[in-house]
Length: 219
Image (cartoon, rainbow, N blue to C red):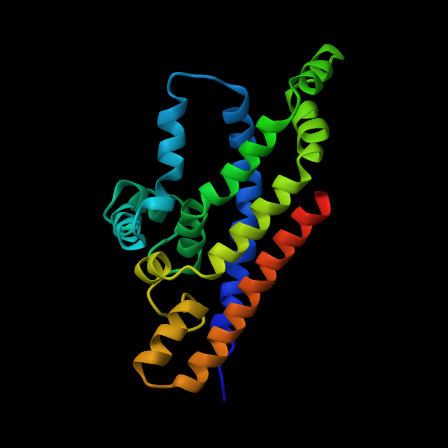
């Protein structure tokens, strides 16, 4: 009988990561779209690093950063009794950083496509930053918002290298679907690997179909 726990862990991880990134990436993307600092190319390059870095490289630096002996790891352990290595919270933190550009870039493009007059009119009407951002800017970029949510969720579902290095393969805690598929193949359990892979393929296809359908509908 197949253990579905890794699959549900992947869904939980993808949902939490996407929700967290909505709160983190939206204000960040808004700031990037509205400011023209000399340091902006540097900031954008740093944010885009997870796209081009091999997952093993990123996972290795996460290991160093989250280790109990590191400044961050020792602080979290002493202050909050929280360990990030080989725990589900550690997977959430690593996935949030790893998937950050997949949420930031669509939102930034959406904000940059807004007519400047809309933003200026809001400020001239006496609206503050948060009112303009939450009630004017965000509702006006629903297509970009939908794109960021779908791509981030699908990308997190398919993570392997980073989650394996940060979380390992602890059943019921850090053993997500991609890690389970890898172990099924190692153990020559191709039937279970096929079932998990087919489900992941179906989710990825449906995510892309939804993305293209929403884009076509807007067009």
